[in-house]
Image (cartoon, rainbow, N blue to C red; front, side, top):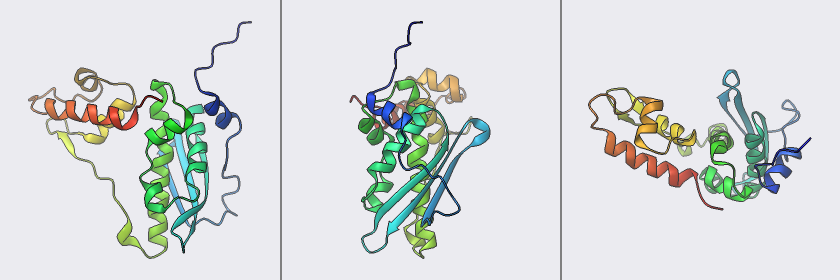
Length: 203
């Protein structure tokens, strides 16, 4: 039987078949911060737990557990290696684009699977700040309503781009943005370009 072509890089294959830093025993792991994102009912959920070098303000260790696809597993595995030794501020700003580049690229229709890891990492860093009495350092990711007629947010548009929408009409089909008065079209188009540049890159 002919073997199907593997659509991923060797590095993705390596981190999928031999993932690093899996959180094996949640009860015994002495975490300084934990982030949980996603919804198991929807198919994807991610836990990231970190240990922090409090004197240096760096991530000493990073463990994770996910219920997700090969892309989610590989991207979180490589992320957990990337952030060791990073300053908390630097790790907080790590993007899916950075992770994707480190992996050597993911198929475009799988990029959206790779965003849970960095979201859970940010949640874990914020959790550490709260636990350590530094609540003033917690950063909140706020959303903005772009289409007031249909109450579509910038987060909805970003998710649509991650799912494969590339034009205003493709985003409109997924979110209904701009189907009312249409005054948001220019803003939506600007956000589409913003999120395409943020999440997709040639590697």
